[in-house]
Length: 365
Ligand code: PEP
Ligand code: MN
Image (cartoon, rainbow, N blue to C red; front, side, top):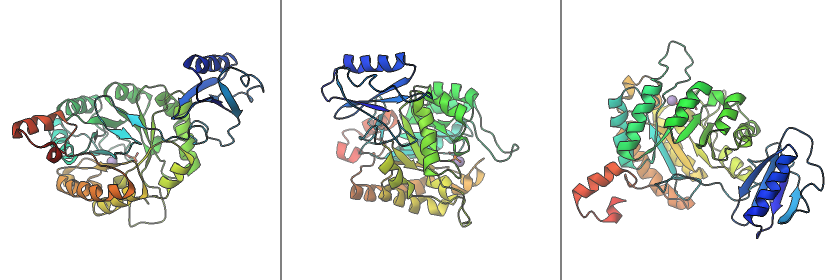
């Protein structure tokens, strides 16, 4: 059920309706929009009794949401969700594309800093790096754990990028939540419902990757799990699905981008690195992702991919990432988007531009 408030409804009226819903044993999710606030009602009991809130002051109408996903649905919230970060103009779902780049795994402080410097200079506002790695083999590198989180905190400090990193279970989530700006839930955990609920109780945005064989509805229901616990900052991520095709590691399903945008207000980014598994296909599919309307990209970059402890085959060299950004900068305006400037958000680059003295701001961008 969805309670649509009148455009001029006051904050007190919204609160009174929420209190009433909660007093009946349901959960109320106030979702402010550009025009008016809607209040989603969830709970695993029967329908809310007719007339319970219809006549309350400020209520315009009460409507049934027929789709299985409720809070995720555009029926509930027609305006796109835009996720913002204090102190930067980086967004997910805004006009500017969100560019996330970095190594698959944080392997050492030196490695993280070398890659971070390059991706920050190229314009990435978000640094990715795995601290906890979900590996097919128990004998493969499993990540540096909290040490990697500490290194990424230093990367944030030095380069001004926000940190995106994966939590693989409740235990790692508690630590990731402390250090990261965005908590990644990986493809293998897309239907780990207890982890999704736990992520729903954090205050940090969640980047939810599509499961290896998840349908659109399963993907949206996974996001619904996070939102149902009160965390409305969910970013969807297409990262390829398993098919018969064997010329790539996975098949990048770009058609899911407009499909998601039709049904949901949540931002969706694309990961062409895991989506193809092949370095030579990452840039072409990045161009296509931007053209199809994705809200951002997540790209694996390594200065020595041949020596990488995970996913070297799909990691771009820093020079290739520069080239990718140059190409994306040309495509973005065609679809009405902008791409962050060269290091414009980074305190590191402002040090660099101070040294360059009087660098015209147009060039700095
Ligand atoms: C990753 O981002 O390094 C990763 C393991 O991704 P996925 O869950 O999409 O395989
Ligand atoms: Mn990886």
